[in-house]
Length: 99
Image: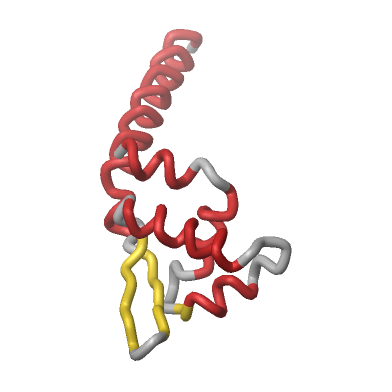
């Protein structure tokens, strides 16, 4: 989960995940979405996301295509849901005490 959290800290990486959430995109199309960032920087972001298991890379000749791996967020999601469910239960208990 640590690698996932570290990868998601950077806003552009979160945006990259949103871009490839519903389908595969070539690296060039991803880079075009960030005109203020050099392509090597976008490539580094893709490498970090792939290293954290958040992206799958497919090669076709010299082109690289990326898509999100939503299942890679399962551990983080379980942690957040458990935390949130616990807090909601606490709030419910407090509200019921007030009645």
